[in-house]
Length: 132
Figure 1 (cartoon, one colour):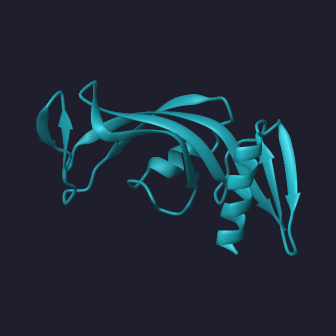
Figure 2 (figure 1 turned 30 degrees about the vertical axis):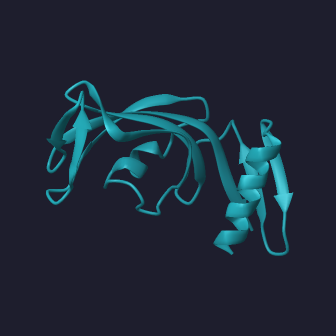
């Protein structure tokens, strides 16, 4: 079912999105909205840039990333701070990397992200919600 929803969302993105679009399958409906607030279980299309001590770090940014809220795909606390945001909104999110996290590069220097507090500037572009 998740694969079907992911395919539907990808098709919606390729075809473009208006303020609200509804696509119906056999057992569910996927709604694309730019006016609701993000809820647990939504898929959001986000842009983000991560900063350590004010410097952007390699591997800490993406544009048009599709993230399912509640999937625990990102660092603890990242997805929770997106809940309540609206499409078109930008916020700064602060998280702490786990002590076992690896390194990154900032301005050509290798820097450990383990146990580091970082900020991410996150913009929510679209909210996708499955309605059953």
